[in-house]
Amino acid sequence: MSAAPPTPSARIVAFPGRPPVPFDPARAAPFGWWPAICIALVALIDRVEANLMAGALPRIQEEFGFSDTAGGAIATAAAVAGVVLLIPAGRLADRTRRTWTIAAVVLIWSLLTVGSGLVQSYATLFAVRVFLGSAGLLYNPSGSSLIADYYPGSGRARAFGLERFAYFSGLPLGIMLGGALAQAFGWRAMFFLVAVPGIIIALLCLTIREPVRGLGDRIEAMRTASPGAEPSETEASGDGEKVKAVEPLFAQLRSLLAIRTLRSVVLGLTILFFGLGGLFFWMPSYYQRTYDIAEGPAAAIAGGVGLLGMVIGTLLGSRYGDRRHGLSPGWRVHFGAIGLAIGTTGLAGAVMIPALPTQIVFYCLANVGFSIAIPNLTAANADVVSAGRRGMGFAVLQFLITLGGAAGPLLVGAASDLTGSLRGAFTVLLLPLLAGTLITFGGRRHYDADAAEALK
Image 1 (cartoon, rainbow, N blue to C red):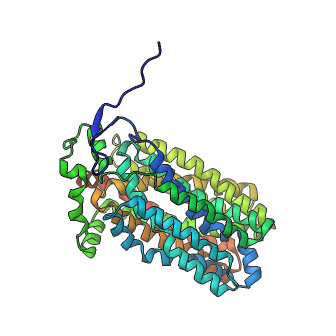
Image 2: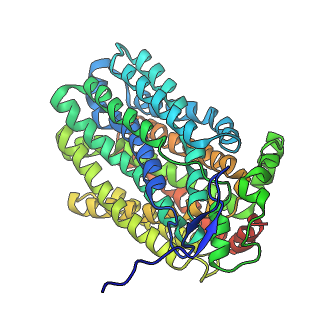
């Protein structure tokens, strides 16, 4: 006779207005991986659409006749437009039903994507991309807050690893799709096609049940038998967080930025995104110009090698980030800083070594390192911010890292115009990445105290 399947060993109020439900506190995903998968799909389709243009950029430049600086300015302006609404989106995430917010944002964004394929000039292309940029990032505070509530600390790096992997794999996938679709059907068709999966994903988001705020923290406390494991009726219903949500905006921002670990993580990730933004946007053009590779294959190399590095890095980062969480002081931040160091080393090799096979190996290594850092530093961001302020905490994080990512394409494009070489232009990314690595290493010593404070 086969053994009976394991049964849940505890009960908790997991959903507002619902009775307690059984769950197993020892599991990394007590309520399954579906919520993380849905948010990951949102991140994936958002980044695919945002990076289609990079794969088709030479064809679009040929039609409209604009410079590298003007090309980089499109990506920068679109990202800057998005950050304008991130802080209000963070307030919204801490106050409203997050699943509805995410579904509405993705649906509206998908319908507006069609406009990119209808433009007739550089000016209108610029305007449409800026308009879309103002909507594309608004899912992040609500989505990241949901993940932190669904997954306890022992599974949080894996959950954020899935979402961040989808987000960053959207970069190479978008580049590859953009190059392939532009070559096969013309660059306008690619924008029409990507709207369809966006609408489907928006509907899937409505299948996620809204959890009680702080659910993941309480499960982690029960799992580790920490004080306060059993939530009060007010806490379990989420009512206790509503008082924090009405805190004045600037007071809330000041209190968030007073968290020392958060400052280190945000600065480290901001500089990391600066490097990745410039690297991914211009790498297909770099392969075309430097190695005389056609548009489609250049996008395939840049996207395919980047994706391989991300798969390896995300698996390593998520697995070992959770495995040693709570066992080694400040482990999430320390491991993230190690990833940043590996990524910076890989980028230096990719820029300085001209032989194509060796350049590809170092380019892959850069993506491995950055993908180790991202899930761990993102999970650390959730760990050190209390449940009632996580929407705003992730809004601040996304605000700054988006600015960093937006600066990368513009500065590399401007440096390319000044020097006449994309290889030389990529060197502008190295010193900031080195500084970001050192800052992140410094954040390790504050992590445990800040994470404990967030649970009070």
